Image (cartoon, rainbow, N blue to C red; front, top):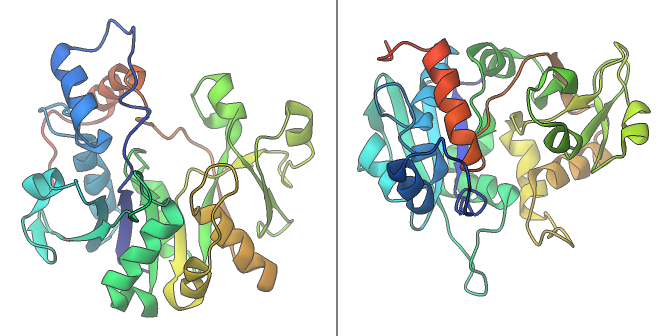
Length: 290
């Protein structure tokens, strides 16, 4: 069981900053979408950001220590969750900030694997423990967060049923497929499969499984793979799935998939703002009761 959660919030939110023709977004929301990290846009029931709801669910799931990975321009996170680098107290959570520094020859961060690596190098205690990792722009449920925290396997991921995701078909079909064996251990990750290819990778329950980037990691085991992670030849980033694949190449049956069937609200573009606002209004109280 682990008590630490690393939240990846160092991205530049480039898709959120693209123009939109959506009429459901207000001028204030448009302004914030263009200027803030997307998990800090004021879309909650009392004007608070999506990050509040992720932290709320994390606390309900039993996490104590939160490490938010921000980029060098992510100072607004500290306005919401504490001015100090470490040990900020926020509604019963202990929040620290890792900075994902951008190399001099780049304008964008180096990707999710680099974000986790920099968190471990700035908070070295994580190298000697198990911890969870997730995106800042997905609202994982209390149950999903609890399952990944409590699973006995030291390395694991939530293996989502693709049919349960309430996204557009275009978006769903773009997700990579998690190829798991009969015991739900990861064998491979298949990127951008065709509809026919995806059917070849159904699990023992005839479900197509995808990852929404929520993992449990053994710091000691995964650190060397984070350190040696190559740059993706097309996306030009160091990606967490690459780290996972390199690890299972050396240690088969080291990553357990936890079968799960539910939607994961996602805040990627301006078009998602109204959808998330409606979801929060339906599923959460006007004021969160921490």
